[in-house]
Structure formats: C-alpha cells, structure tokens
Amino acid sequence: MFNNLAEKLQNTLRQLRGKGKLGEKDVDTAMREIRLALLEADVNFKVVKDFIASVRSRAIGSEVMNSLTPGQQVVKIVNEEMARLMGEKQSGLNLSGKSPARIMVVGLQGSGKTTTAVKLAAYLRRNGRTPLLVAADIYRPGAVKQLELLSKSVGEEVFSREEMNPVEICRLGLKHAENESFDTVIFDTAGRLHIDDEMMEEIKEIKSVVEPNETLLVVDAMTGQDAVNAAKEFNEAVILSGVILTKLDGDTRGGAALSVRAVTGCPIKFAGVGEKTENLELFHPDRMASRILGMGDVLSLIEKAEASFDQEKAKEMEQKLRKQQFTLDDFRDQLGQLRNMGSLEDIFNMLPGGGGIPKEVRQMSLNEDNFKRVEAIIGSMTPVERVEPSIINSSRRRRIARGSGTSVQDVNRLLNQFSQMQKMFKQMGSLEKKGALKKLKKGKKGFPF
Image (cartoon, rainbow, N blue to C red; front, top):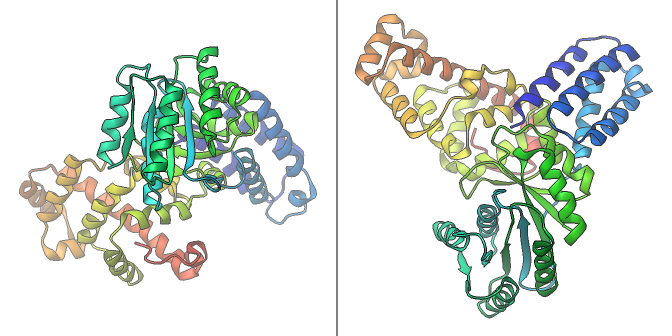
C-alpha cells in the first residue's frame, strides 16, 4: 500500500530527524524531494502545490525554528497536513432518518463496484443491520449473476428484475425492502466504460426516485488521476456524499487517495484492501497518513486483531508475552490467526517502525502451502527446540529439514522469521508496559497480543 511513496517520504524525513538545527535551505531541499515523490505518485499537481506551500509555511515558522527537535516537528507537520489533505477525520455513513436507509453505489465498469456493493452489505451486517441488495445493472453481461453469486456466499439477499428498466427495478426493490423489514437498501447501479450523458441521466433519475442517504462512488485507486477525474465528473453530475477506493492493497501509487478529497470535496469513506468480502475498511485519514510516513497504525491493527483472533487464546498469549515466553508453538498458532488479518506486510506496516523490518520477512506469504510447510518444520522439532530455538545448531537443522520434507534453507528462513516476529511482539509488549497501548485501546478489551 503506497510502498514507493512511503519509502521516498520516509527517506527524506529521516534525513531531517537527525538535524539539531534546520535552516530554510534544509527545508527547501526536503520540500523538493517531497514534491517529486508526490508527483511520481500521481497526486494532482495543484494539490501538491498547495500541500508543499502549507508545509513549508509551517516548517519555516516559529513552531519549528524555536523547537529543540526541529526535524521531528517537520515530520509532525507533514503528518498533519497529509491527514488534512485526505479529510482529517474518518467520515462514517449517514443512515439516519427515513427507513429503510438507502445507499446508491455508482462508478465506472472495472472499478469493482459490484464486489464493493456486496462488501458493503457484509460490513453493514457485521454492524447489526439487515441490508438488501438491488441489482440495477442490467447492461453489463453477467452483472446481476455476479451480484447474486457474491451475495449468496455471504448470506445476503438480492432483489432483481432483469426484464425491467433500472429505475423501475430500484422503485420495486425499495418497496420490497419496506415490506420485508430490511433496514438498509444498497442499489448497485449500472456503470459504463466511460462517463456518458445516458448513464448520468439514468443515475439522476434513480436518485430522484430512491432519495438515497448516501451516494457513494467506487473508484479504482490504481488508476491514479483518472480516478480523481471520474470522481470530479460524477460529483458535478449527481452530488456525491462519499468515495470508496478499491484495490488499495495493490501496486497503487497513492495519487487517488491523496487527491480525491482535495479535488472533489467528497470524503473517502471506505477502502477496499483485498478480494474477500471482509476486506472493506473504514478510511481513517489520520491513520493512513501515519502509515505512509512509517509511524504505524496501532489502532487499526488492534481493530483487525480483535475481529480475527480467538479472545481466550488472546488473553493467554498476552500473559505469555508479558513474561517473554513466546515459543515456536505460539508462533505457529499466531500465524494461523494472522492469516485471517491479511498479509504480514500490511500488519508490519501498521507498527511504528515496522517498515524497517527486512522486506523478505514483511512480504512473507501466509498461503495454505506455506503454512503447511511451517507446520511441518515446527512439528519436526523437539519440545525443547520449540521453546529454546537458540539451541538449534546446523546438525539439528539438517535433522528437522529431513523430518519435515523441506530444505535447511526453509528451516533457516522460518527461524529468521520467528526471530523477527519475536521482536515485533516484544515491541508491542514494551508499548503495553509503558501504558501506550492502554491509551490507544480506549477501553477495548481482549487485545490479542
């Protein structure tokens, strides 16, 4: 997620952190590097210009020049300005007022609109609502079938009438929701390969009929400025209430996330971070800014963990970590649960300084084959070796490799990954002892680490 942008910004700011005193020349050099990094990430050039001007104005002001740690102050300013650029605070859904609540999902073909509609329904279900999906895209071949199949996989109901026009389908779908006591209706409207008058007129007509609480545009974050331009045109035509960015887990440069709020004024409400139906997250501008700058996102990590981990095992693990008793058996168990949270690279990037963990460890894959290999290697160790892996010398490694049907290199790699994981959990334990996590949790219980 924003790997190239994050790496360049972190390298530039790292050079400032070590300076005991900053002059205008130092600030201008850093601003030049940040400007180039943002432009390469496909951030709108006007947005970049305003961002740099705002950061520079604050960076050469008294709050930095009179500070005992000027480099750290500049990092803080960049973090705050980047969060402001993306909306400052998380913007939730407005589902109050008339019942059922109505959400109209719009977007171009290929942006992931239909999949996102199902993800949104699953998200609402997890949060205690009973959504109905209305299939209003009758033009794209297989669109209705795709919506029905995806919805069936998560137990959601779809209202469809392929022989009718989309406006009438939405009208009847809303009536069906009222009669069957659904409290939320999600209208999956038709997209096109490009914006055209016919599509916009149809969306306007649907909007006048269903009177949605939310009109959400789904845009592909990997398309950069094209996504921002699409958002601008949709907003001018139908007045959007928010944006959902998809494919943020891919090789996105970050331009859409950093530009769309500034260009359109529409808040980013959700981010799609994977293909599974649960891979839809609330978009927190302040947390995203911290992740881009390598400052971590412990709150999101806690929320992900609480949703994925067995709470009883979590309490047991927390006690072990407090006593520095994390073993290879625990490592195996934790990997199994971490698989439910997404890629290890994303998890490490949520930790303060997690970007400094070696790339080969951060990108460790937790697919089924790799997990079976880990289980086989750990299963071939003696109970003592699992508790004290430091005793595993070269002869023991050869024995473990033979017993697990793997290579010595596989065993070495696992032990290295275990060592890195130990460091990560010790870091979390250190934060716990200092009381930092207690403040972050804000009353949350059952933190799994």
